Length: 131
Figure (cartoon, rainbow, N blue to C red):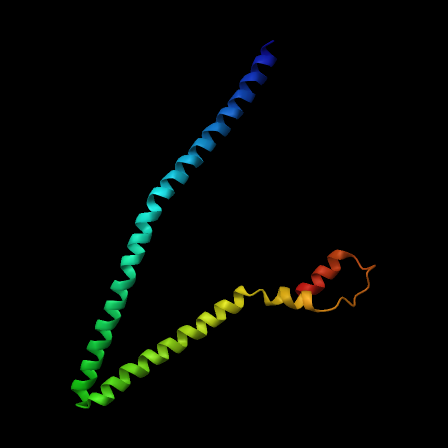
């Protein structure tokens, strides 16, 4: 009889732990839902602040270039070229990240006609594809 009671307590304990974990997950999801709008608001406020900081930095840089050269066209051109170079570097990085996301190897594997012997084991063909 004590064995049956022990098994009953063990099963009840397991169900209790599962119910507690489910309750914990619900509370975590509720907490995440409460903090998400404030995160989006702060992110929305951060973007204009970063833009204004960049504009201020470029204005100061142009001013210092103007003070050192006394040529306003050269100052504007220097700031423009700097921004152009940074934009090109960011676009190259973005292109690289986009290509990493495009699953090129997967598409290559799907494009190639299967010329291998069908009697070959699947594991060996899988290894050959990933090489």
